[in-house]
Every structure is written in structure tokens, then in C-alpha cells.
Amino acid sequence: MSLLQVTGLTKNFAGLTAVDDVDVTVEDHEFLGIIGPNGAGKTTLFSLLAGQLAPTRGAVVFEGTDITGWSADRVARAGLVRTFQLMRPFESMSVLENVAIASHSHTRSRREARRHALAVIERVQLEQYVNAPCGTLPTAGLKRLELARALALEPRLILLDEVLAGLVPAERAPMIDLLRDLHADGLSVMFVEHIMAAVLALSERLLVMHEGAELALGEPRAVVADPAVVEAYLGEDYA
Amino acid sequence: MTDTAARPLHPHVAADDPRLRDRSALRSYAVLAGLTLLLAVVPLLLDDQSETIAVRTLIFAIMAVGWNLMSGYGGMFSFGHAAFFGIGAYADAYLLVEHQISPWIAMVVAAVLSAAVGMLIAWLCLRYKLAGAYFALATFAFAQMFLLVVQNLDFLRRTEGFNVPILPENSMWMLQFEQGSDLYIWIPAIILILALAGVIAFVNSRSGQYVQASRDDETAAASLGINVLRVRLIAVGMSCALTSVAGVFYTQYYFFVGPEQAFGSAVSIQAIIPAVIGGIGTIWGPLIGAVVVGPLSELIANLLRDPPPFLEFMQGVTGLDVAVYATLLIAIVLFMPKGIYGTLRDRWRR
Image (cartoon, rainbow over all chains, first blue to last red; front, side, top):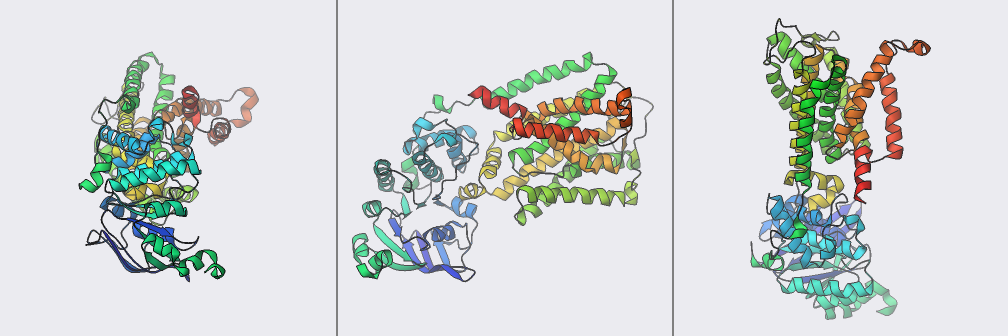
């Protein structure tokens, strides 16, 4: 049984089909990359999976349970957790408190939650900011905070929405290493990203979306060499 | 838990790691203990005149602490807390006058009723995605509706209101004492201390943290597994229950309640002003604000009752208190947007 099984997933917004009949599976421990031009429906797909949006049609089965149309909080508690491309920290809280919010999903105890949160913060190498107000974090720190909060839920599957966007090249490499480590430790990942070097370095399979639909799916290097994919990105002159 | 998820996060952090130390709750309780001592002594020092001011201040403080739970920590700005203060004031008057039921029981009834009504109103507002100014307007509309309903209900004596019958002797059970009794200060003071202890415990609990996270970013909170609606309704229920207790005490202290004193829009403003002046979303802000506003409102009331010669034209003018609050509010919003406590705290931290 696949960890995640998506069939015929479709989302219409008043005439615009943002996600069009997408079928995809994610296996346990898999790292699935997702690419596509702007507006291809990648973030909408995440929103449908994580429950921020309800699909128009189709089904999402997670660990054998049909979670189609579940609310976001319920999906997250079931172990499917997403991050946001535009970071959404809890502004009034410190970094530790931010992460502890997620750690509280395992425990009512404030002490235990904070201890768990600190372990996660160390895991994502944010220890220099533990008790800093999250407003003082640079972009790279906020991206890691976003990741830390999602990890603190101890998800079965994590959906990462452009965690490398906005990072300067020097900041990308450590983030890629961190993601590789997390994956090596058993985390299952769906990874939306524009930076091809990162996508190719990390993905085991690659899904290409174009105008809401699935354009290609398979072994990453084969997929990016596919003429249809090249055309979608660069226009037909290059195909 | 599967090894899949557990391995990356194995908690290797020691429980006594110094970075985990958080004394803020402990500090708050210590301040509260000091405050309790202070409030125990204050009644002994006051004459009758200043006792009235102290009681008024305490009522303001209880209302504002209640309001702050929902609006400050919960981010759901209520402009209609008169509804819950009024439920308390009228539940007490009705049960006492018509059925000779003790105010202590009225407090429980009012708290449960207010919490239920408040949660229903909030549920309706949140259900239809009202936020910010729209949420505030909706709560204001509900409070006005309550005012109109009460003014048209025979069993609540329409616009006449209730007079509390005066007993021949002091009675703790009926919450009635001779004029000037220190108990009129001690009882609301104890209610306030318990309320503040409850607030400290709440904001440091899981539910309290969830409420604040939901206020900061609803979408992010939900994506981390928080049932946002549920935690918000908890905050609303506690807020409305506490405010109604202030209403019960109001009726007992002033021996009279009418629709305007209970459900009037000025009452909603009285719940908001101390919190805004002192600092929204802080533990001590509402109390500090009440200490400013309580004496001020008494000062204004005296001025109107007995104006000095050059202000004689103001004799009997109503609404001056609201005008002064509004001016004060504008000054605070301009110069101390986080309130007295919030601003000073931030400055001190830096």
C-alpha cells in the first residue's frame, strides 16, 4: 500500500481548472519532487492534500484512510503536514514557542513540549535563535522555522513548498544537506521547488505539472530530458 | 509512533537544559501574590468616598480581564461585552428579586449562560468568517439586540429595571452588607485575583498557546493540527463567563440595574478601555488600565454632579465620561499603541 494515493484530483476556481485530474502516489520513505512553471497548480495541489482547500473532484487516500475533504487540522493530526512558501511564523512568539505549538500535538505538558521543540530546533540547526523573537530571524532562519514546526508534528509525510526560495546560493547547500539527512532518516517528502539543482539532487521521482495537469512523472533525469517538459518550460523553439 | 518519524527527532535534549528555562509564569504568580497582599490591606486605608472608587475600579478590572481573554489573547475583538455583563446583572436581579435566590448561585447561572450565549454568537461570527472590524460590529449588534429585547420583556420589567430589596442585616449568602463594609472591596478583589490566576494558568497552558497561535496566524495554526474554532470558543466562553460575574456584583453593589446600566453600549466601552489603555493581550494591562480609568470615571461623575462655578453649564450633562475615555484612547493609540504596560515592558526588555 502506498503512503499517499491521489486519484483524479481536480480543483476548479470559477471556470479556471487549477488542478486537473492529477493521479500520483507517494511511497513510504520516498522523496517526490514536483516542478512546473508558475501557475502550474503545485501549491494548489498541496492545499488540496493538506486540507486548506476542498477538491472539486477526486480522492486522497493517506495510509489507507480516505482523507478527501478533511479539514486542515485533522489532516495534520493524521500525519500529513505542509509548510508554506510564504513563511507564516506566530509573530508574538519566540522561535522555541513557535515550534512548541507543534510539539504540543504529542503532549499537554508545556515542559515536555518545549523540550521536544528544542530537540527539533537543534535538528534543523536553529539553535542560535532558540529564545529569539521570530521577528528577528532572517529569511533562511524563517524557512528553517517553517520546516521545524512541521517536523515537530512528527509527520508521516511532509509537503515542502519552496523551502529554498529566497535563499542565497550559499544558504541553499546546507538546507539541501539537511533535507537529504531527514530523508535518509526515513522522512517521506513531497517537494515543490524551482531550483533544479536541488530537485535533481534530492528527488527519487519527479512529477512535472503544467496548467494544472500532470505532464510527466518518473525518473528525474529522464523526465527533465522529455521534450514535452522542455517545451512547457522554455517554449517550443527549444523542444 | 513509527521509527520513520521518531528517528529524526529523537529527544536528546536534557530536561534541565538552561535554554528551556521559563520563569515567566512563576514571575506572574509572584506578582499576583504581592498584589493579593496589597489588595488585602487597601480596604483598611480607604474612607467611604474612595471605597466607591475602589469598587468601581475592581468592576472595571474584572470586565477588562475578561474582555482581554477573548479580544487580546484570542484576537476576536468584542465590541459587545455589555451583552455578557448585562446577562450577569440581570440574572442576579431577576433571580434575587423574583425568586430570592442567592447572588452566589446567580454568579454560577450567569457564568454558564453567558459562556453559552457568547460561544453561540462567536460560533455564528466565525462560521461566516467574520474577522476584525466585522466581528466587532457583529458583537456590537448582538449587544444592542439584547438591550432592545430586555426593554420589551415584561418579566424583565422593560425599561424600569430592578431594585434590589434591602435586607435588615448583613448577609454573606445574599451578598449584602452595610454601606461602607470592607467586604464590598474584598469580594471583587478575590474574584479579580482568582481571574488573574486563571489567566496566567491559561496563557501558559496548551489551550492558551493554541489560542495565541490562532490569533497570530489562523492558517498556520490549523496546518499544525490545531482545531482553531474549538480553542477560540474556549477563550470566548471563559471571557464571557468572567464578564458576567462582574455584572452580578454590579447589581449587588449599586442595588439597582436597568437596561442601559447593564446592556448599554457604554458598558461595552468600559470593558474595552482599561484593556486598551493598559495593554491588550498582556496579563497586567487590563488591571493597570482599570486603575487609571476607575478613579477617572469617578472624578468625571463628581464633576458633573457638582461642577465648580466656571463649569456650571455641565451640570447633569451625560456622556462626558465617554468623551474623556475617547480622548484618552486616541492619545494612547497614538503614543503608546501597546498600552501602558505593553509599551513599558517592551522598553524595559530592550
